[in-house]
Structures are given as structure tokens and as C-alpha cells.
Image (cartoon, rainbow, N blue to C red; front, top):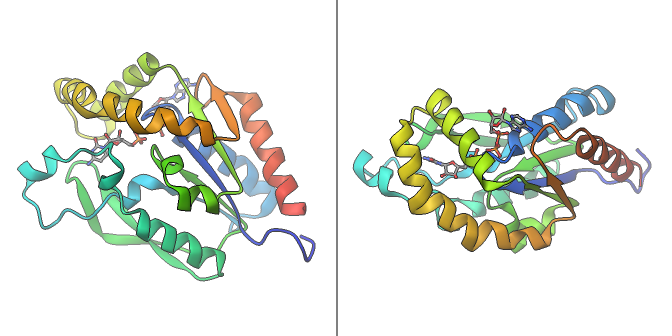
Length: 214
Ligand SMILES: Nc1ncnc2c1ncn2[C@@H]1O[C@H](COP(=O)(O)OP(=O)(O)O)[C@@H](O)[C@H]1O
Ligand SMILES: Nc1ccn([C@@H]2O[C@H](COP(=O)(O)O)[C@@H](O)[C@H]2O)c(=O)n1
């Protein structure tokens, strides 16, 4: 890195639930790690910053609208990103989808040259948009997202098929229309088809490499 190069490049990846954000983030992470060094790149998932709900009963937690910006603690996320930019380590919260709240454990994160941020509502927050050096919107068709979410949430997040479908109609789709889809206008790169789009992965890797040098 030259003296003027960015000390910490932050790339945001937004889009609908199950649009492929995690997949593309982990692919770029794995492939860039070899170039910038194992300890110089990290991924932060917005989901880790869902608000703590340990003070609520399980019945109350189930009723939360997890697709509304108010469900997330973006203050803490912004604070953590600012600390990482300043070269300080942070403790990233761990989140349980089955308990609908934070775990007691946290994951330590040291400052990085590259941070890939991924989450549904990232581009709705002007503070996060300001902090990002580039942003991506995963533009996967909603019917494909629903199919993938159904499979993933039943297999990995302790959901029943019925609960996924009820939640989808009640909050996931309406909040996508109200908040997530309109935030697409703020993205620098729109990625069609999902997390395996090879050209999009290569474009992102090349752009990050350029930012690190500029
Ligand atoms: N292009 C793709 N082709 C096939 N499966 C995909 C593709 N993109 C994502 N998936 C799968 O769809 C599911 C949801 O993707 P994920 O990356 O977890 O979405 P998100 O992080 O946006 O919620 C995962 O099981 C993932 O492996
Ligand atoms: N307790 C929770 C918290 C979040 N969700 C859903 O997760 C989705 C966001 O995560 P992705 O990995 O799918 O982007 C979001 O659509 C929430 O509905 C949940 O079901 N329960």
C-alpha cells in the first residue's frame, strides 16, 4: 500500500433475504484473502446487529418485524465500523435466529484492510452509505429468493415451512417493497442472478484491489 492508499476499504452488499449476499461475500473473502493476507480481510454480517431482545418473552420475540430498520442496532454497527477504521479491535455480537436474540458470546475482530459488510437494510441508512467505499445490490428475482429462503431457514434456522411462508407474507415481502427495493438506487453495482455470478465476483475483487492501491 502507498502512503495515500485506503487504510480500511469497506464494501457493502445489500439485497433481499436469500438473494445471495452471504454467498458472494464469502466467495470474495476467500479469494481475496490469498492476495491481501489472511488477517487483512473480514466479513461483517448486519444480522449480528439485530437488537438484543433478551428482556422479551419468546412470544414477544416471535412477533418482532425483523425486516424493519428498527429491528437493527445500526448505532452499534456504525460505532464498530468507526472503531475498526481508527485501528481499534471490536467485539462483534453473535446472534441466534432460533432464540431471536444475541448470544452472550461475541466474536473479536481486529482492524482490517478490507471489510465486506452484508445485510438486507445496509443501504437504507445514510450513515452506513457514507462509510462504504462501494456498494452492491443483489438483484435476484423475489420468487427465487423465497425458494432459497424456504430451503435455508428450514435446514439451518430452525423454522417450519409454514412459519417461513407466514412471515414472508406478513413482513419479509412488504418490508422489501417499502425499504430494501427503494435502497437499490444507492448501489454502485447491481448484481443479477445471485451469489454465483462469476463476473460480479471478479469485478468486486478488481475494484477492491484498485481501492487498496489508489
Ligand atoms: N446463484 C445461486 N445458485 C444457487 N444457490 C444459490 C445462489 N446464490 C445463493 N444461493 C443459495 O441460496 C441460499 C441463500 O443464499 P445466501 O447467500 O445465504 O443469501 P443471503 O445472505 O442474501 O440471505 C443459500 O443456501 C445459498 O447457498
Ligand atoms: N430473529 C430473526 C432475525 C432475522 N430474521 C430474518 O433474517 C432475514 C435477514 O437475514 P438474511 O441472511 O436472510 O439476509 C430477514 O429477512 C429476517 O426476516 C428472522 O427470521 N428471525
